[in-house]
Length: 391
Image (tube, rainbow, N blue to C red; front, side):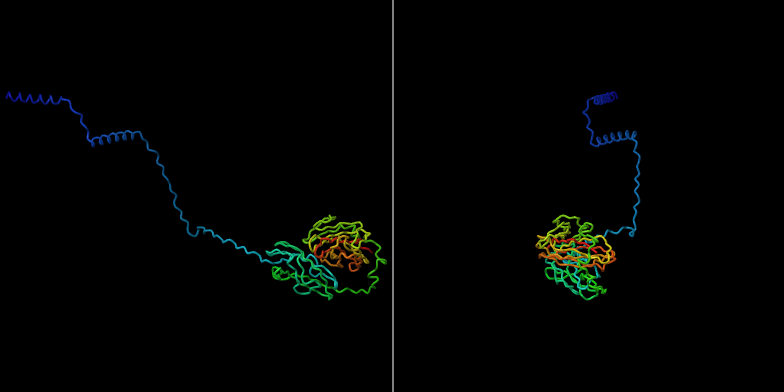
C-alpha cells in the first residue's frame, strides 16, 4: 500500500514538471485567421453603425407618358421641287405707246405725217440694225415696205420706231399693220401674236366758198401784226428728244448727245446767205432716226392768223437730212394733229412757210415744232428762222 502511494506521488511530480517546461508558439490555421479578421471587421462596422446617420431619401417622380392621338400629330413638311425656269422666246414685242398719231387721228387727204411707236424688246435676243420693221397688211400709206431698226435694243429696253407716211386721199378710217423681222427673215409680232398698227381718219376739207386770195393771203397783203414769236419764247416750250423720250434743258448746249435747242441771232444758212433774222436751232438726239420737238403753251387763235417761218439746214451741215413738221393739240384734246410736214436736205435751198390757221380760229392751240432725222442725225442742225404767228 505504501509502495502504491509512493509511485502515485512520483507520477504527479512528473506531470507538474512537464507543465512548467517552455513551449514553441502555436501557428493559427487559415480558418482561424479569416475568422479573426471577420470578427474584427464586424466589430468595426458595429461601432460605425452606432454613429452613422443615413441621408434623407429622395423620391424621384417620373411624369406619366402622354400619347398623342395620331390625328393631332403634324404631317411631315412637303418639300416642293424647285421651279423650272423657262426663258422667254428669242423674239417678242410688247407695245408701249403711240408717241405720235394716236389711233383715230384726223388728217387731211394726202397729208404727210410721221408715225412713231414705242416698243419694248420682250424676248431674250438683242435687236440690232439687222432687224427691220416691215409692212404686214392693211394700208401702207405711202411708206416703204421695210426699215432697219435705228440701233441696238437689249432685252427689256424700249425703242421708238418712226416711219414717214402720207394719208390716203379717200375720206374715212384707214389702218396699216406692221411687224418686225429678224436677221433670219422670220417675221414676228406682239406677245399675243398680233401686229402693231397706225390708225388714222381722213377728213375731206370743208368748202367754205371763200375766194383763194382771202383764204391764203400773201405776205404783202396780210400778216403785218405780230401775234406770237416762237423764237423769242423758245424756252417757254417743253423740249424733248427721243428715242427714248426725255426732256432736255432750254437753252441747251451745242453737240449735246441727247440733242439740243438754242437761239442764234443771225445764222448762215445752207444757201450761204445770212438769215437776217433770229432763229431756233434744233438738233435731234444723236442716234439714227432721232427726234426733237418743242411743245408751246396754249394760244387762242384769232381769225385770219398765219404761221410763218423759213426752214433749212445750218451752213456746214452737209449731211443734214430731216423732216420738219408743224403739229398741234387743240382745245385740250390729247390728239396730236399735223398742219404740215416738209423734207429738207442740204442742197443749197431753203423753204419759206406761210400757213393759214383759219381752221383753228377760236380754239386753244398748243403748237409743236418737230424735227425728225432721216437715218443718221450727225449733222442735222435744223433752223426755224423767224418762226411766228401773225395776223
